[in-house]
Amino acid sequence: MKRYKTIPAILAAAVCLASCGIDIDEYKAADPDAGTELKITASVSEKLALDERDSEDTALELEWTAGSNYGTGNAIGYVLDIIREGVDEIYSEDLGRRVYNASYTHKELNDILTSILDAAPGIETEYTIRITATVTDHPELTQTSELTMGISTYQPVSRTLYLLTGNDGWNPSSAISMTRTADGFFTYESMMDACEFRLITTSGQLWPAYVSNGQTTGQNAQYCSEAPSGEVRNFSITSRSMYRIDVNLLDLTVTITDVLPSRLYIFGSATPGGWTPEDASEMTPGSGKGIFTWTGTLIGDGEFKFITSKSFWPGFVKASSNADDFSIIYSATELPAEQDLKFRTGEDGTFEVTVDILDLTVSFRRTGEAVYENLYIIGDATSGGWALEKAGKMEEISDGVYKWSGQLGAGGFRFVVSTAGYAPGYWKANDNPENMGIIFSDTQLGGADDRTFTITEAGGYIITADTKNLTVIIDKGIENLYMIGGATPGGWELSTRTQMTKTGDWTFSWTGTLKAGTDGFKFITSGDWWPGYVNDGNGKLAYYASNPGDALDIKFTVSETAVYKVDADLEALTLKVTKQ
Image (cartoon, rainbow, N blue to C red; front, side):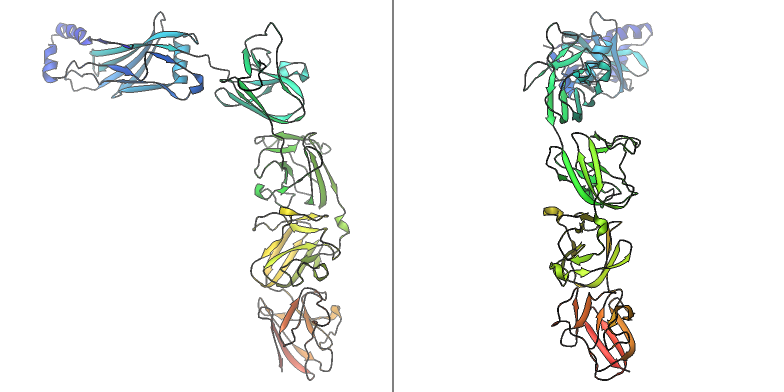
């Protein structure tokens, strides 16, 4: 039972007041409550066991009544003392004015009792807790109230922990620092070989240490302040893999989890997705544990590394700045810039990249995509659909850059390098609709990787594919239109095709002589026969990305040789031929 004791300091004050010629009854007359008892109470019973597992929780709450200012009208200040009998030191805290409570967490109270009052951990000791109320400017007017209670403290666990394996002969200088996540909680994550290990609290010292108690579940660790006399049981890892070791020193548990990534992404400015983690390219798991492969185009002056999810960390980076070093290291958290090293290929091209995260090695080799000289657009957004023989050939306008213009409907499209098969080819790099990156693969991609660009509004488009920088530009509108045929000045020679003047996003015009009595004329959009616009049989324009066959390849004609103004509207698919 808590014991309370109120000290009538007013009596002592009365002696002082009398000697000073002041009658204490004068105070009482002015303040009918003069001498009101100051009383302290606590939130717990007479015993309190502090526990480090509850270190941030409130352990003790104290409250007290206001006491009296003896009619002076002055404020009252409060001082809280914690006293251990037989110890010279006293914990004293000046709380100031108008304060009627105080509280302490398990950690705060434990620190006070062990560091100031020299309490022995684990032993219940009796303490006196006293509140003193003093009237401002009248140190002679004081009241005190106190209570006693038994409190047992704890020995705080180590704030540092190191993982020490036997692979280096139990050399404590090779121990690895673990990450402290909270009081008593530590973690470590890395690639580890099969080994035995223990946990030491001080760098460079074998003991104290936490070792195994032989249990496989629940509380499986024990603390040894020094080397035990018998056999030391260590924790063990049976095979090489990536592990996360979680330690709870409060509950004496050690948990070992195999966290070898099941996914890996190639990531960086050399890749189609750039430095946006959400656009990183997922690699394909190989036949062996921890092996991943990816084939795609890399930019020579760009950089790349590897991440285990679509966020910046955890990940694998280049182990050193040595250009001939193809090893990697793993980090669960962000590394300093000088350690966050990346790989470079030094040349643009399509590469097969292989990562072995068990051996921590990377290899990449250039594939033979350089032999491909052509690029075709294919997909259900095109007039030829997914028929390879109807894929639209693109015009190479510079080294590795191809352009195509024509009508597209609602649907998807991608690119192939020949009409012999759906691969090799280029696919949309990721699912982000705003990302216009492409990736190359010499084999057919399937599932979620079989991505296409999407057209939602039918119309005329200009598609530009840059196979070196792995980008695609989709512009609405047709850039060029040419007349070709026996009725035109240039005849049927592609090199002498007749260029029309662009008058709007979709309109073109030409004025010149057209010949009668010939096989007529049609329209093309580049220096190749297709894509093109022909007569739909009713005098309107019909678009085809590839040759539709003789039956549909109908030409326009004129009835007499003369000068004509030809106006083509590729959006409305109308043609107006006016004799001048």
